Image (tube, rainbow over all chains, first blue to last red; front, side):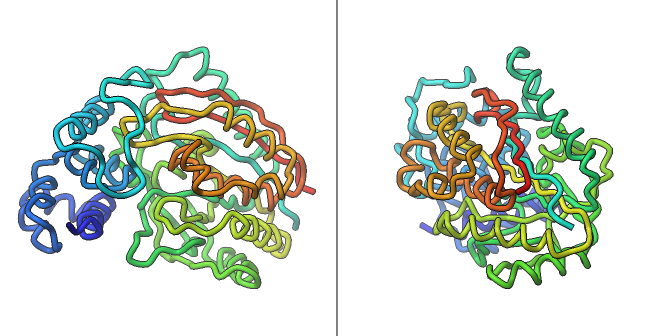
Length: 108
Length: 272
């Protein structure tokens, strides 16, 4: 597991429009510059918000990545819930889920 | 000059990005309070506004994370987020590198602050600016307290940073305003978004309005995390503002607005 490298990729992607263009053209090529596990690499390439959340990506980084991927807010929240449902609790970091899988505290 | 204005406010991206989803009976008075602070800020005729933010990995990362940082450029840009998602157009914001340098030099007398000649604004600064400076007229000096990537500086160091900013504002000839922006309790960017501990928030704002240093510093990160979520770590910016102003505060608006993922507040403090 290389959460630091995974987070670094997303951090750099979130703030760099040139890298975003590169990622859109060839996501695989961008991910090879970071020391990622196969699971992490796949999650980034697939835009798998649920798995990235469970892997422990800081929510602030993940939220910006979701915005870059044009994922609407309600969908973003649901993808994280689905990720926990499929993969289990968040494995690292400070953004663990504290609400129930079917709980929508803000109505979305 | 002395510091000419101090205010604090919420900055959640939903405030602009999901404005249409909020109940108007909560949203409209919140926005009205924000607009009133805009008028008060401009009436203070600041030459520059120091915005103490809790940025969200727009510039700083765990490869080299400063506890405290101040921008030192003649211009900044933002938002880093998709402008359609945040519903704030991209803009270039005027800075003042020479003024920043003078402020940083004074802050460094007591706080080892990092400086940055490049700085991109995220929602933490852009949401407040969209309300407080819709015409993009202000000169801005961004400051940051790491509230996102632990280990975090202790609260008493955030207080010391605020004291240092006040000393610097008083030392330069320009009229300096200070806006601090952060959340109180919230669990942002997670499935918990919208969870708000209203009682905790009201107690924090009560302490903030008294300017009582001991009461404001009487929080632990473990306790804050348990009761106010990871977003609660952002009280550091608000504590810095209290230290800078030294005077009592007035909370002009507070209400939990779950679709904005945070308790929403606007408050000002007297300069003493």
